[in-house]
Image 1 (tube, helix red, strand yellow):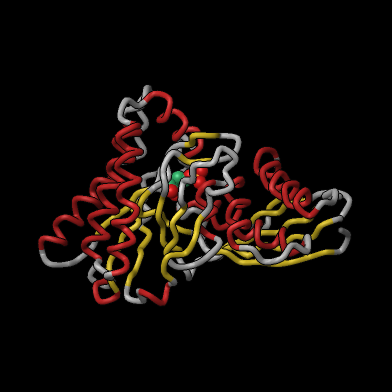
Image 2: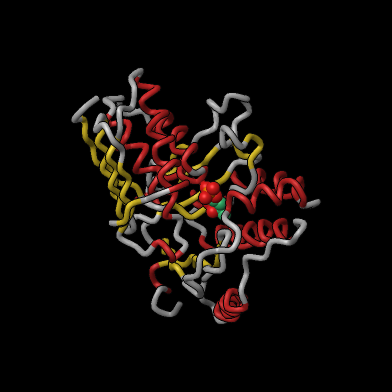
Length: 302
Ligand code: PMV
C-alpha cells in the first residue's frame, strides 16, 4: 500500500442522550442508543499515509506514544484487514482547531477523521455505515462524528456489532439557529477517563439498569424535539439525561463524581436565567465543563 495518502476532516459531537456503558468491551457495543449534535466550527484534520515501513503518529504537533499510539495503529490495522493487505507501517498526522483540554470530545473527532482518512488511503470506497462501525473501535462516541448534524447511534442487537453504528437524522441546515457554547470551568485532565468510569458504573451502580431503560426511551423524544426545533423540549431532555448519567455514576462503588463546585454554580445560574425568560440549558459529559444549549438570539445574554 506504499505511497497511498489521504486527508479527512471530522467534527466533535456532543451527546444530548449520552452513551454510558458497554455490553461488549472488545467490540465497543453500548447497552443503550445515544443521540448527538456535531459542532461544525470545530474540527480535526487527519492525514494518513500507508505502507511507510515504520510507523509514526503525530497528534497536535507532538509524537503520540504508548496507549494513544497503539489505539491509532490498531484502527489502521483493522482497515488494512478490510482492504485485505498488510498495513506495512503508517504515518499519521492529526491536528484540531480547538484546545484538547476543553473537554470537547476531541477523541471522537480524532478517531472519526482517522477512520475516514485511513479508509480512503487504503482505497476503500465511501461507506458511511462501515466508517461509523470502524470509528466505534477507536472511541464509541466517534461513530457519531462521521456525519454532521444530528445523529443517532443505535445500540443494535447483534452479538457481532454489525448493526451498531450511527446515522444522520437531520443535517445542520435543519436548525441553523441552535447554538452550543462550551463553558470551561476547569481545564484539568479528568481523574477517571470515560472508558474506566463507564465500566465501573456498569459493574457497581445499582441504578445502571434504570439508566439504560430511560436513556433508550429518550432517544426518539430527542429526535422529535429536534424535528420540531423545540429548544426547551430538547434542553430539558438533555439536562435530565445528563443528570441521570451523573446520578448513575455517583451510585458506583466507589462513587464517581465528575462535578466541581463551579459546575453547579453554572447550572444554578442557568435556572435563574431561565426564570428571566432566557432559554438556556446544559449538558455535561464525564467531566466538570458544561456545554450550553441556546438559540442564536440569546447567545450574547448567555
Ligand atoms: O466515546 P467515549 O469512550 O469517549 O465515551 C463518551 C462518553 C460520554 O462523552 C460521556 C457520552 C457520549 O455519548 O459522548
